[in-house]
Image 1 (cartoon, rainbow, N blue to C red):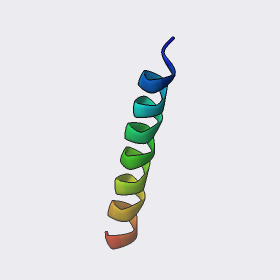
Image 2 (cartoon, rainbow, N blue to C red; image 1 turned 60 degrees about the vertical axis):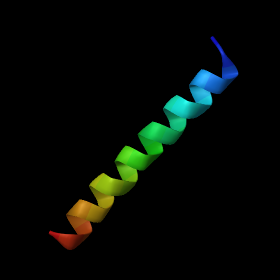
Image 3 (cartoon, rainbow, N blue to C red; image 1 turned 90 degrees about the vertical axis):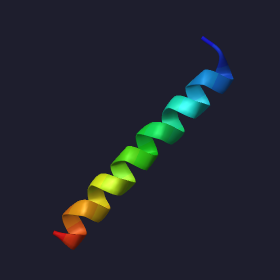
Amino acid sequence: MYDGLTKVFDYALAKEMFFAALFVALF
């Protein structure tokens, strides 16, 4: 598996987790 693809996937997952936590914190 390409390292770049894995890095992008990890970034997207982290961003999703961040927005989920932000949504829970606000509401």
